[in-house]
Amino acid sequence: MTEIRDPSIPHASDAAPGAPFLYPEVLPGENMSTIGIILFGIGILIFLGSLLIETSVEVPALDQLGYGSGGRVGNIPGQHTQLMVALGGSLLTIFGTLIYGFGAVIKQLATGQKQSAKS
Image 1 (cartoon, rainbow, N blue to C red):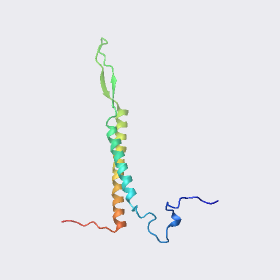
Image 2: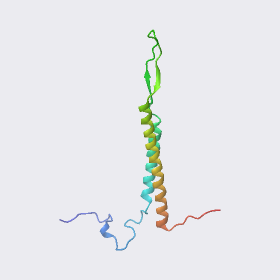
Image 3: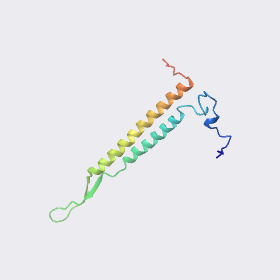
Image 4: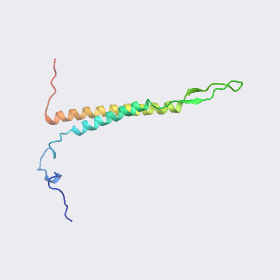
């Protein structure tokens, strides 16, 4: 069976032997930086969303005559859920930052650029 493909799209079989990159316009580490930024943004959104989780419940407060005004008390399972969602968002933000940083370092190493220290 013959494979039909568009000749204008580069394919792995088109690469010359010993070619460093199949797609020279995409540097190593660029995709890592993009993914890191996306994970950072999602982590921030999850963390901020966790602050909107309701952690209190309505309870009736009755005195001996059956009268009283209702009140709200802290709901431990709700607080636990809020804590876990906030922790997950924080970890995703940290992970995205690390991925972005590693992508930037890999991109610098691939292009041969060196960071100069200004003093």
